[in-house]
Image 1: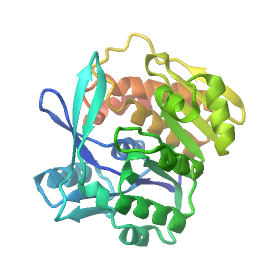
Image 2: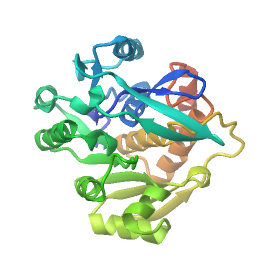
Image 3: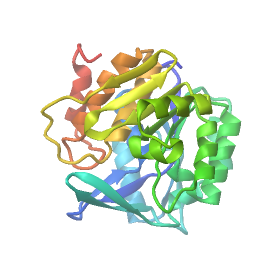
Image 4: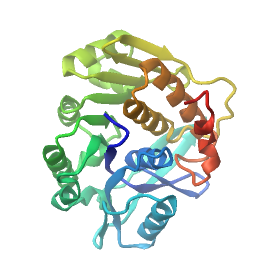
Length: 295
């Protein structure tokens, strides 16, 4: 990878409706793209929103953040995605509605944007391909772009099957998942299971998030473990994994070592936990990136 080539981010853009009724822009791919824009990688986001007021809010927020809008499609038949988020002891659970605009991305239209263009990788989550239309769009984009794939496993019942997720993992180079998802796919949640999962699927890296216990990364150099910073005033953990993914992609672009990437990704994920929801338009969150020791 090179920082001069943009990440291609494919997937859902939606609003997380928090328990207090506040609506926060979200969706794992969107969250990752939002952070990467702030980090200067200028991602191209391929997604679809409704021709509705909620979709207008998505467009306005992305434009204000300076994001490339060429990959955002509008849909007159399906609404902009909405997810109801419930929190218990700060940990989120998600109620995901069917037949949202992001389930109907036009793959051929999106492919015209990337044909012959220089991109570094294709990022997507497993949730995006829950429906036939978006699944076909993702397959088409992978075929046309021939890019290495960073996949984020999102096992959200009832929107996944083992066969389907296994196939997606088999197409990826880097896979991120939490320890419960590792247990579902590999039969165990420890480092031994992660090593076996990587070997079985021929992956460059497996990234296993473990909540407050931190992260373990398995790659060619071995197993690397790190804990999050101490004394973080957690508001909620919504989007922490997406923040981690964004900095991991940044580390790939800048050729950081695995240990350095882990340290910086955990620092940024902890910073995201200090604000409500997964994204914020307050650029002070990114001031950590201006510290010489962070870079």
